[in-house]
Amino acid sequence: MLGKGLADMMEASIGESVQVTTATGERAMLRVSGIFQSGIADADKVQCYANIKTVQKLLARPSSYYTDINVKLHDLLEAPAMGQELARRFGVDALDVQTANAQFETGSDVRNIISYAVGVVLLIVAGFGIYNILNMMIYEKLDAIAILKATGFSGSDVRRIFLLLSMIIGVAGGVSGLIGGFTLQNIIDNIPFVTAALPTVKTFPIDYSPKYYIIAVTFALLTTWVAGWFPARKASQVDPVEIIRGK
Image (tube, rainbow, N blue to C red):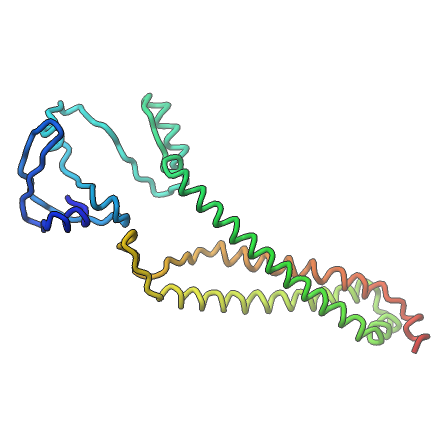
């Protein structure tokens, strides 16, 4: 089996025979049974696969000769633990994919930190906007607050009213944000993205994992609740006697 880049350079197609020469000068004619793409163009230009028995024969090695064994897991996150288990059980060097691609993982972590930092800053800015809106509303509704408290509403009742208003803003903003975000994801998911380094990727890669939607809604509700707490607390402390006397 030839990598697509290698097959293109050799102008070889399925069913044709190619000559393979080893480092020791051994030669053999092998038939191309398939062409694969790993998704990494640089690797596909140099990689090929053959039956283990054929390779052992070409290298003049016994049937017990193996250099590497690759284990594919259903869950990528289990690789470090599995590597330690295999190393301990069989006394071999086991390298997990996270360690082998530590540089790539570090770059991904940095990008994730930047993305979350930008999101948190935007939510804080939105929280200040909600705080200012509720603060101005309290000053405009001092008469109404005073009447409510004069007719029997307690400070906790007034606080709950403004907290409820704040949470309504948060829920409305969160739902509209989810709908808008999902719509934008679908639009971006259909934008062509062609690069030689990733031949199997045709459009911009999008992650539709539900955890990101849950995180967004949770942060939105938490931010609006915090932003509404202080104005609501101020409204609950309004003295109706002073407001009515001033009027």
